Structures are given as C-alpha cells and as structure tokens.
Length: 124
Length: 124
DNA sequence: ATAAACTCTGGAGTGTACTCCAGGTCAAAT
DNA sequence: ATTTGACCTGGAGTACACTCCAGAGTTTAT
Image (cartoon, rainbow over all chains, first blue to last red; front, top):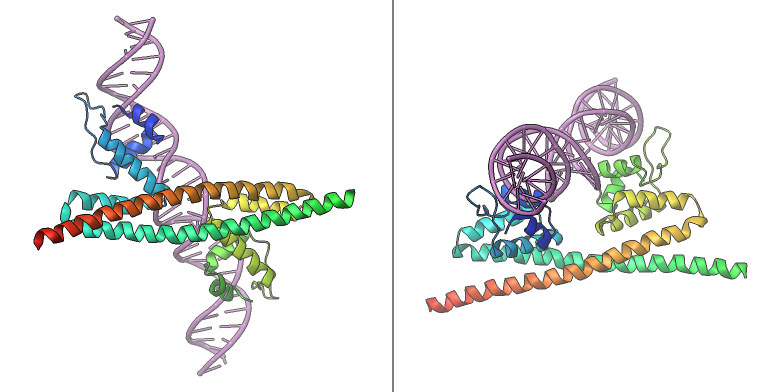
C-alpha cells in the first residue's frame, strides 16, 4: 500500500514515516518499479509498535537500538528483553508519579470548587 | 536561602531556576543588597508545584498563563479551575494509555522469557 | 494528452525546554 | 589581601523529534 494509505491507518504524517525510515527506525520499505514506497502489513504492525512505544516516552534512539538487535538474530534476545524490562520499570515509576499528580490536581480542583461555593453562599 | 540551597532541595539546576524566573514561571525572587537571589519558603513550594506539573507534561506556557491568572486575583478562579480540570482529564487519558502500553510490554517480556526457557530445554 | 494529485529526495527550518558560556561581581577562608 | 568558590546577566548553543520546503518524477482522472 502507498504512503497515503499508511497515513490514514496510523495517523502519522508522511513526513514522519519517511523520517522514521531515514533514521533506521523502520526498515527500508519495498518500492514499486518507479521507486514509490509499497508498505506491507508487517510494516504497519511495526509502525504501530513504534507509535505505541513513542507514546510511552521511549526515545527514538532506544527503539533504533532495539531493531538493530532484532536484525542481529536470536542471540540478542536477552539484551532486547533487558531493554523492554528497563522501559517497563521506567513506565511503572512514571505511572505511580502520574497517579500522585492526578491526586494533587483533584485536591486543587476541589479547593477551587469550595471557594466558588463559599462565594455563592455569601451572595445568598 | 541562596540558589545553591534551592538546587539541593528541588534538584533543579541553577540555570533552570533562573530560566524559570526569566520567563515568568517564577515571580521575581527577592534579592540581597548585593543582588544575590534570596529564595523564601513560599518560592520553594511554588517551585515544587511547577516541577510536579512539568513532570505531568503540562507545558511551561500553560503554567505561565496559570500564574498570570493567580496574580489577577479571585475573579480568575473559574478560569484557573478550568485549566486544572483540563489538565486532569489529559492526565487521566494518559494514565489509561500508559497502563495499556505497560500491559503490552509485560506481554512482550513474557514472550522473550518463554523463548529463553525453550532454548534452555533444548540444551538439556 | 494534460491537468491535478501524489510521491520522491536531501536539506533546511521549527518548537520546546532547557543548558552553557563569557565576562564580571560578591563572599568566605587563609 | 588575595585566592577560591558562588553568584550575576544577557545571549548563544543544544537536544530531541519532527516538519516543511523546492524541485523533480509518477499516477490518475477527465
């Protein structure tokens, strides 16, 4: 499928898709005879995984490293696992952090809510 | 207290603290006669809140806007509350997202774990 | 067959949030 | 009194992750 189709499916931009390929975050995509990119389903799955990990804050550099290991074959599985475990732990910490911040926000919102209510009482 | 003390307490850098003041994310900090910053406890509390909101991904611009509203007095309370509520909702979505990504990571790690175990069985 | 729409490359530009000077002043210790 | 270390300002530089061209070729619809 052509790049515009991938744009629709992944909601990444064509520029981003080409950029990812350029920096080695995606493999060289197969081309038609005239040189136009022809994405396969497997490419889409990889793009989705990349998208997902990026949303989780995993730096592009780490993902490139990860796929370099994938290309090197099965003996890199422990190293790949290490990367994922590390990222999981980062994510876990982040999740805990965000939960606390969420609580703080709820508290602050509540404070404002009460101030507004008090003002309304003063008026009446 | 001087900036080095604030660095210790908040683990922000001196450059960042001065930068935050420059862009109006912190108020002008009081100075000694010779022009050296002399932070108060209230400044620390504000810095902590800023730090917290930054970790949650709230853009610096939004925080500046928020403190602009604080300076304008009580009639901006509903608007301030709106900002916090908006950020809370963003955070909630993000939290859900991250939870899903965490699950995906756990799954992937498990897959690798199983591959490693299978290999060990082959050997024995 | 020709206009309109899509795709290509390589390189430059953008936004966000710092981070790092240079060149100078100030404070504390010897 | 002078060395050492902390602090000051204004401005330039950096890192990351895109994002946006210009100029050229390709495909599709009329």
